[in-house]
Image 1 (tube, helix red, strand yellow):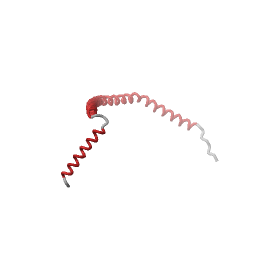
Image 2 (cartoon, helix red, strand yellow):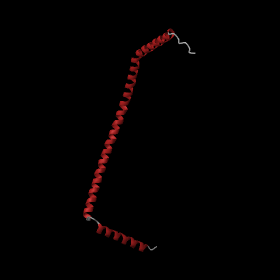
Image 3 (cartoon, helix red, strand yellow):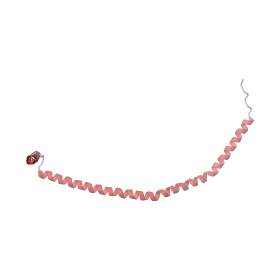
Image 4 (cartoon, helix red, strand yellow):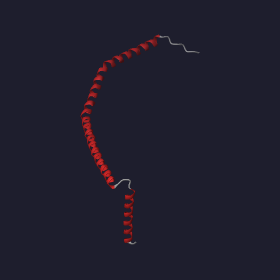
Length: 122
């Protein structure tokens, strides 16, 4: 392949493309460059804002983790203590209920013994 012909064709294509772009452009080059510069500044500001927000989120997560590390063990301990206190407080009632249930069972047994038994049907 002829390198000179390839290079000439490439340059001609680039020149033709550039000329077509300049002739078909909806706005002037100055306006286009201004819009591109505005877009670049806007993109930089957005990136800075995203970076700041990411830093704030990171700090919030750190504080949440630190708070959880200190507060959760305390809450678990409080729940254990309250469960033990509740268990102690219901123990007398539990025993009283068991006594009443035993009394009811013996009363039912006495009633079953004192009632006449039905005769079997023939």
